[in-house]
Amino acid sequence: MKDHDTIAALMEDIGARAKRAAGALAFAPPEAKANALEAAADALGQRLPEILSSNAKDLEYGRDKGLSDAMMDRLTLDAARVAAMAKALRDIAALPDPVGAVMAEWDRPSGLHIQRVRTPLGVVGVIYESRPNVTADAGALCLKAGNAVILRGGSESFHSSQAIHACLVDGLRAAGLPEDAIQLVPTRDRVAVSHLLGMTEYVDVIVPRGGKGLVGLVQREARVPVFAHLEGIVHIYVDKAADPQKVLDVVMNAKTRRTGICGAAECLLIHEDVVETIGQGVIRALIDAGVEVRGDARLAEIPGVVAAGEEDWGREYLDMIMAAKVVPDVDGAIEHIRRHSSSHTECILTEDADTAARFFARVDSAILMHNASTQFADGAEFGMGAEIGIATGKMHARGPVGVEQLTSFKYLVTGDGTTRA
Image 1 (cartoon, rainbow, N blue to C red):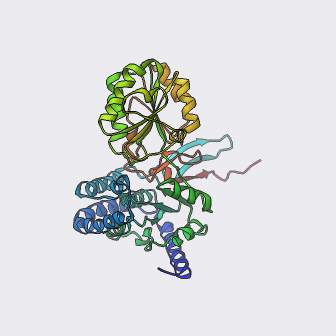
Image 2: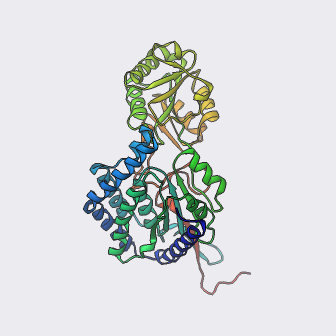
Image 3: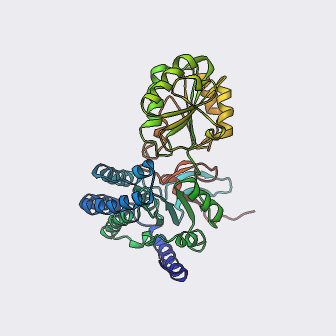
């Protein structure tokens, strides 16, 4: 355990080096950034035994801490997941470089020509918990956007993150970019997080990725802007005009594919006209798949359904548990979502285009889906290569935070000896 003064000095040094690296990255050639990511992807394959060995240490640590099955799943790496990380790096490398891209341009009667162009944010601090793949995704996205990044992984993924970070540094070195562009805080001590949240001289934005406790802490204590979401309280509304097969396919995938991700469905809302038909069928399928369904008074009459309590509305389970409720119509579903949603992702299942349009217009979550699994709430699935998180606020970034969301902009104004009257 390092004392507070030592950690303060460590974080100060990391911040200063990140700031210098950000200055160089702001005008780094697109080819150099792409080459760094390609080389890092190669390194992930070459260092696979080392990464899996490091992950084994983290899994033992997680078991000793009594992590839930969902958290252990998030923590676990295997050859396929490392290969997926490498693919994400290559996908990000192949994206158009955002830095310098012209967002808009126009001429003024005064003779001025004005362009709004993308620029890097500067230094991004990323604080995350058990998912080691965030090390690769966050490092790559920030680099592509011309930002330096300070990564602070969770204590559970400490060794895995170090092994993955080493691959990213290999890539930077191979491309001739500053190795300080992607730094990993080398301590589990939580004091480091407190220092990172207050480093206004060096850090331009903080992105927390983890559970409600972590994100709440960051939002309360950060002295720099935060891109964050507290929870993924994801709803699916089954309309009276829903297709039964689509309901079955989408709900089962949204709940059971991976229960521990923020896009996993947590609450099922069923139109009262189809409770005895579509509703009964999908609830039976969930129960048969091992999901504990916690239903309101009407649904609790179905064999196998557990009676829901008030605490089940607006709850993120991240487990094989799902709340379920009968609503009178789409407006009843919208009202429930407004009261209990975390503004992450919501879905409507219907064949009625007008009802879907009403849902889309009146629900104000970051991501809305129609007849599609909420497990698609992911930057990679949106074509962004990967994501650094899902932002549920309304300032600057919202939804998957990818390369473009990790940039700001500036105005370039050109005249020809032009003066203002």
